[in-house]
Length: 147
Image 1 (cartoon, rainbow, N blue to C red):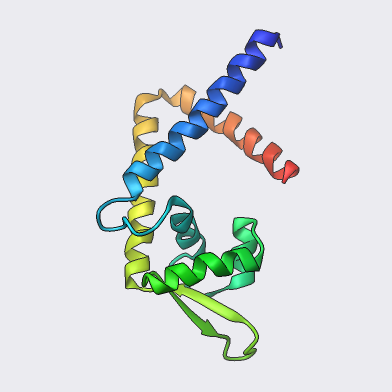
Image 2 (image 1 turned 120 degrees about the horizontal axis):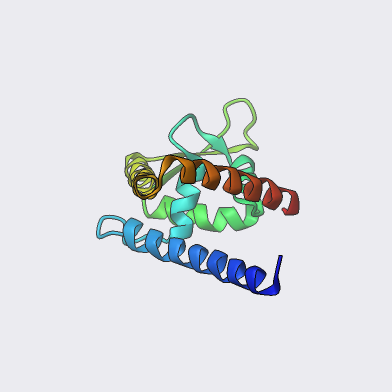
């Protein structure tokens, strides 16, 4: 690959990452959810709407320490997005789940991702979608090896 191609790919990747973060922040942090950050929204996404999860499971998903997650969870509990409780079998385990307000934020975030994905697939032809999917899958596998 030529030096120009490598530089161009690097610029495109950096621009895409920046644009996605900007778009997500503008779309997700609305009047209803103005009291949380993009990072908070991703923690809400990691907690999910199923049964309560342990702090360590969510921390691992977010690739942060339990101590770092605790700070964010404390704020989300104060703002009414997250519930915290001790495990019934093991009182040392802290379980977290979403409140109704947290579930509303989760669904809002999910709707944003679905909308962006639909808009992207609408502008691409079937063959382009297949190529994009293959390239992004390879990129995802590569990045997982690095982390």
